[in-house]
Image (cartoon, rainbow, N blue to C red; front, side, top):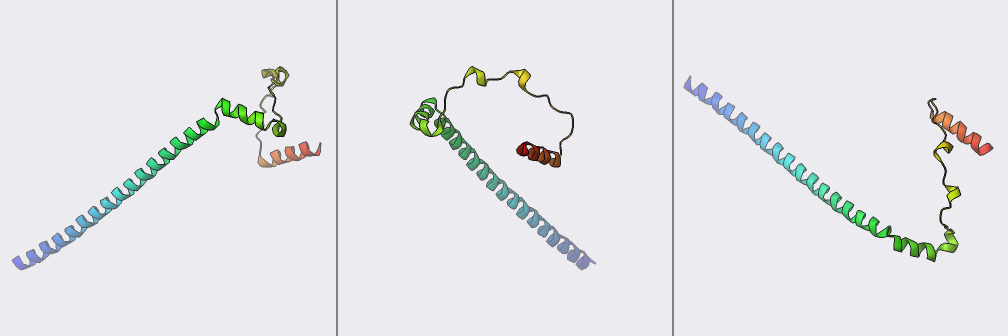
Length: 114
């Protein structure tokens, strides 16, 4: 009787050890995955920071003015005149009909045919 109880308890202990090991391994995998994601987030944050700095440098008014002056003949940019600015009344009202892709294609074809 005691031998049977010892065998059963030993088997239960081995099974529980396997379960604990599996839980530990699963937790370590989760931690590794979390660390990889954190590294990826840090890299993306750094990339965004670099891109913002580059965007800021590229959009400096002095730099843009020099580019416009250098390439004026090719791009022929002029200042905006008052006649180019419209009013709110000139904006068409939104239609209430639902546009499908087929209707948009038909309108596009009609506009190119005209």
